[in-house]
Length: 541
Image (cartoon, rainbow, N blue to C red; front, side, top):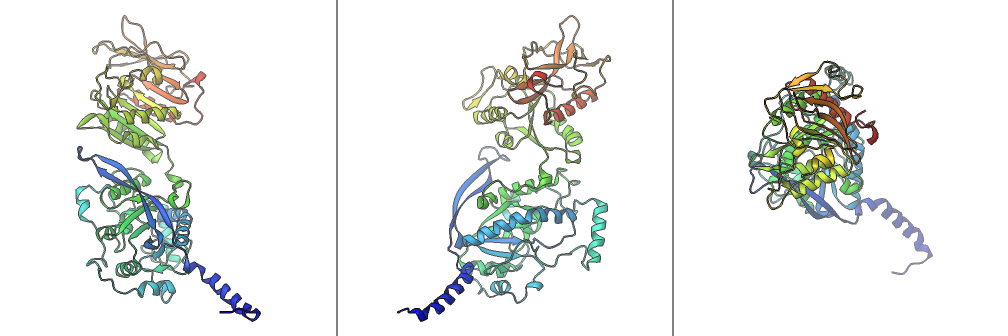
């Protein structure tokens, strides 16, 4: 074809049309994703290892389904969390769309506002798939693999976590808006944009047909709520998994309906994590939004409470009972702290389940361990944790936590100088078990926040626990309490230390039935997590 000056207007018009139509002709790309699963150990039943797998996805064979991100909800806190998450979710969707992903908007029960729109017609027009699964149009409550696990939360109350007064006021507001307070949604939340080329459907059959028409095998679920619609809808994780799609949950772009007043009595956000762990074990892998957008995964602001890991591996003082009870009563109350308990493996006392993984996002380690040699990679994780300047609270036998007197097996490791290197003590054994120990306040320690509220002062108290020989303390250690028995020198029984940049508290006491000990332990945890903690020259003040 020959072009002349007369052709320019026509060429210009064609160019403008192509520019306008460009979004519908996106050049598909490949994205590299890292899928995370939890796989049960072949040797230790009930123990799950985190497993990651790198995978390259062809965008033209991939879709994102946005599940039930409605414009309103009967739970006000659920509305707040969607509002906080939605901007990030829209950025993910935008990026995926630009790459060539099919975007499917699925606000269940809200198809009326979209009748006759291109997105709705796109979903309705897909031909019936030759492999249409039998139950793809119905809700799915469980798939066979889930029979192997225990569902991790109680959601029988519907999962609302609102303050009762706020909830009542919200219900009245919904009524005034002409909405049904129990089901107030009418459409998808507007922050999640719908663009040309996107599909709109809440129908499992339509969505399956559309996926098959496009040759889509890879599917990402985002939206709410993880433990209900995201898992159970006809287009949800369970149906996609059982029918062979390469399905993943974007775990930081979701939320649960979980009330912390129900079992297992953890924070709302920990409840979400438990559901995600369940999904990673029994349903499908997960990914995070930073794999599309860079930076870090999304985190709800209210979920940023300091995370405490309690590592328990001793068989003398029942801290496997006392510490979780202490956490429930004093630490998890009002969700001040997010506490995780990492116990020794019942089948292998030299393995603390999930120890290294838990340390990765730990803000404070509480240690109650006696003479264990753990896998080298776990002890390396502890060394790295402390090298990073993170705090430690250690109890009683933790002075010889990693000292097995050279009896560790191949692949295991020990740290016999842990007491001197980190705790600032000098453990050399203990006095007789039947001798009563009298506990007094150390000189100059009365102003320390850890012990000033114990009411000791000139009123010592007694404990039946054997007195540890811990003298002399290290140069950065400061004694808070001393213990004494008749005829023997007094020994420090509680002190603070600075191990590099790590704030450390240690006590050789462990009498959980004594209110003074319980108060001291709580105050020590608060001190260890206080950004205004003292410098090495004034440890514990």
